[in-house]
Length: 523
Image (tube, rainbow, N blue to C red; front, top):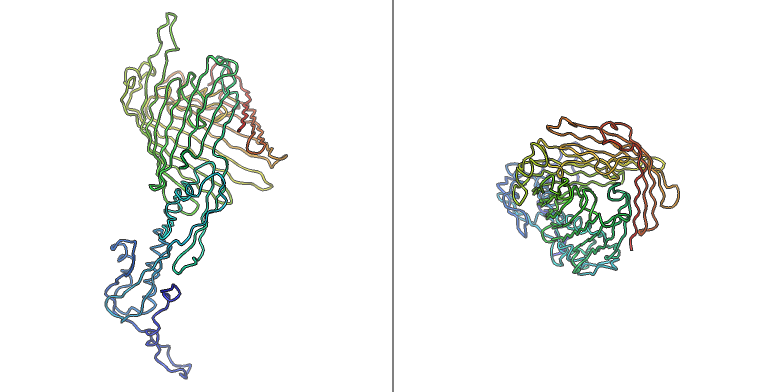
């Protein structure tokens, strides 16, 4: 049966509602609508909803004096419930029937007829279809699950996928068109910045390589090595990051490993280093069904961080502080919203330490921080917003923070200072059990091709428990920045920061002016 035939209303019932002939006088009362007693509804066909959910939606349309209009409203209510649950390719109609008692509703569905993939150069058709399991031919896509599949597929940095539907060539079908914009999946890159220290060399040189489609299954891997151009024997940071989507489950699995001979840095473009040692972690992110332009996911993670203090020794060569370990179990929620007027995003994370593994004990903790214990907890958060201003200006803001009621070992403290947090200061110059930092930036219109300037205001605060020397500190800075790029290969940034307040809280000899330079080239 074709779909246009399925929308035929109960014409025979409508005739019964006409109580007057065509030549009736204008003064005659309007015809009364035929009404019936409805005791329930029976839904015929392939109903993806549960029986209880279906009957709850139809319950308001049960009773005496139910007219044709109310019967049609019942069908509409059930169809609305289907759409809300992602079953937008289902239709509900009233078939011809004897009215009274139990009313029959018929449910029909559209299925996918053909799938056309366009624009892909570096990803195979099989790859695209694997990332969109809802588009199986002969099935009726759940639009909520399909939106989740798209959000997960578009996490790949080398492809963007969009799906549109049109009326199918066959009856009761829709044809899907998948538009793909992709780029090379293999790349190498070089990064140069001045995030180092006077002791280990101010410069940092990173060499890295990445692959965005291992095994043609969207597995992504990044490997990096960082050193100091002037002190190569003192700085070694190795890192690897891997993640793999599980499209059938709407999830992403990721893992990392890094080892560092210095106490700060960013490894594999992803992992923030907060101490010397070896660090590894694994996480599973579950992507929730998008709601309009809002995307979100939940992440459960476990990290193992072994901090090494063997380089900090007494004159006799003995370690001044023992090595220690943290093993936080984390649960986080991340949300993102994007519209034409701008975008914003946020995340909340709860971390609880699992006291297991060598060095993850109160003795090691207490030797590194008075009052610290392995039963620590922390709440971490972040917020980002960006939107255009008149005359092609741009506003951007970022906030990162941590709150903990416990005395934390140094590697789990919240740090401020540096190119990625509070400019004008050295990297991680201050740290505390709780704290936050924020950036406010106003970007100019393009001064030349791919060249923009910005003015920024940065602020930060840390708090420490049971620390009479520095219980808290607040610092702020402002400055100017430049952003320039040449295509997708070469980019450079320069920020000149000046400390406005809080200089008395900084270590002795800390300058109140600092330049932050970063240059990257991708092969």
